[in-house]
Image (spheres, rainbow, N blue to C red):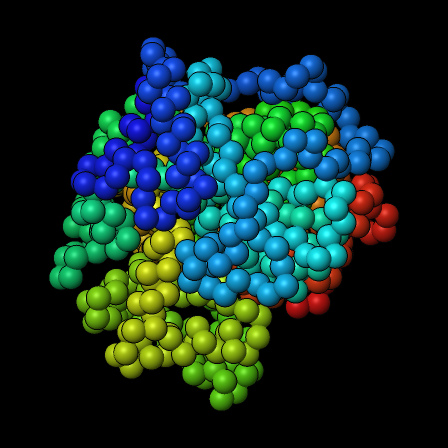
Length: 542
């Protein structure tokens, strides 16, 4: 099975190298394709079951014991064999249409990782981005960041480097590992343009009924499932959190370090927890930043997101209202947002559907600086759209689509679905969830159909123990996943007999770490000495 099959489009795009592929990634991709074409013959059908739980996960020699958390965690180490880093600040900032943080060193590299560990000669490329400051000690151990399928980890790292949390970089370089299958890594390209459009609108066609919308979305999901299975076979299930954890283990082996210090932001927390489950004592630190509820079924995950994002939008509206003239939404921000979404639903928002408008708003809030200018800028785009000028909101919608709804992210999300919801349940969920969450309930229910008809991979069982007590960062104002996931991990921690330290930051935006120097200081202390001295529950000002 050749690597090229992963990105053979159903249209005319290049099978491996696109306009988004950086020069150093082109060189690696060409080499990977050649190796795959020469070295791969027979392919086993079906997903790789992955390594068993808790052991060393394929590392050289046995993994450190993880049956009980040590009194003091091991010291993280600098890589013995590093990657071939190249400066890439202007390039990666340009890819994301944002400014490169000043005064920092931004480097990129590619890591070849086995698509299936049972066939190590067949690889894909995993994109790496490293950021450090002039003050970062040369011998400092790197911390590894993943935001999973929420958005590219490299974009999340730029958010960290631009915010108050950048003080962490003075003590440790942070390396973002982009999820396999998205454009910064080897991109997956398996949906048709029509299917992508239907996903972006959640099946909305002007003038159609709700039932027709659900039916159209379900039909597109079924077609997308068939197309991606055909394109990616036999590895169509190699993009979930099990595979993402495998990529982290590939990085650890390449670095030749005993353990990794992990930062999981949002859905990336699932990857960090999965790594702890699959690779036992290879985890040296576990930082869960506004985590999602690990292993929850599709219905519960969507319901929690609807509630959490609704709360984040309310918080945004309240924070905006106190800005006075700087907030174009005035004192009734939630009502204006509701009006904009209603116009999108009825075809009166220019080219934007309600789903695209909501994605634009939540993504804009997620990435906006914590400043009157940042909050006010998103508010202005919403207010202008309500008046009929959709240019600003359409720009945010385009960014949201590129960051959050690529083929690779769809495939990865559907690989991990548990307890899928049937099509005939969606209408009732729309009605029920919209009563309690009028801005987000319908969209959350409709989005359950995106994985309709997709096969899911083997779920990763939660870890029975943790090699180190995790550090949990909570942000109830997260507009991507909502901020309720941390409480959803309580039962997991109880079963694993671990007592994490939790830090709350009651602001608005994506990633508490990126936005608070107080949170960054706690993270630095945790990395330096675990367990942390002091209270197990802490708060940082927002």
